[in-house]
Length: 124
Image 1: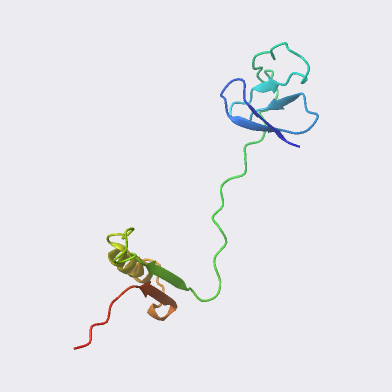
Image 2: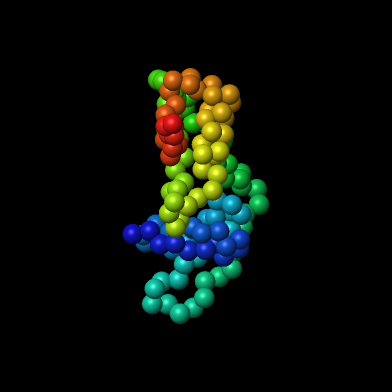
């Protein structure tokens, strides 16, 4: 089971693998030593990589998510719980704004957007 500890230098949370007695922080490169569960002694302070050694490899660069494929579809809910104790204001306006955004910014076809609202029909 992984144990969560804080880096002794920058306090970044680190996941300590089972049986490990130390861990290197990916952020500040400090080594945090972990005392045995029965030991009362405090762990030593952070240590830094010795001079002359190459620095550890940097993390992989951020990559955008893969492109979506297939038809774009959206369901927009503009439910305000009208005439109830928990009625919300502006839900219909928010739903219309989201529809506008999807069509004009993200190029969704109008036929692929389903609007769910509480519009009341008035018959004369």
